[in-house]
Image (tube, rainbow, N blue to C red; front, side, top):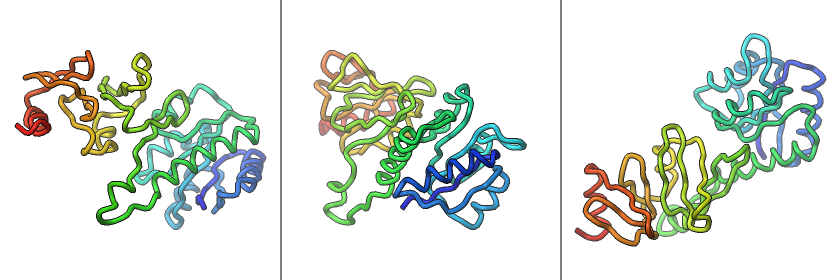
Length: 239
């Protein structure tokens, strides 16, 4: 069960939210709050996995509330305003719902949260089977959705300031662009399959076709190797 909390300053909206939550079998509503300050006190004594959160509230907005938390659960934003969508997804929320919310759209958002929850809480096997039990994919935020990307499909990752571009073997002309740091994606990718060759590039060992002095090639694409990563690259070919 996913332990959740509902926060909205409008009593009728909060009542409707509670009713929608009650219709989703894998959700366990631990409590409801009318403002973020009340929610902060609630979180001091209760641990939750998912928060349904309004944005426009007096005192502290929903977005400010998210930023104030050191330990962040998953969030689904529910608001009457579409203009906060980009800022919300920059905070890695699971979904962004605009009032009035249809039940089927609400359930779809909850299913996204469950998929992410199951992924994060997937049991791992200690010992020789540990690597085989690890997920061979990751999820990234793209156009208000969590998109599944298989590790084996990734050819290389390119850093673009606050964003990354994931180049795929299955869609060579349609890379995935998502707001994520190179450090974050590097931590999610298995080091047995991927190697960082430059501050702006991570490549799949499987898809490397050639290595020169200062470059690696994936097909016809040439990717630079910076000096600080040359030893790591040399280790791949046993030099």
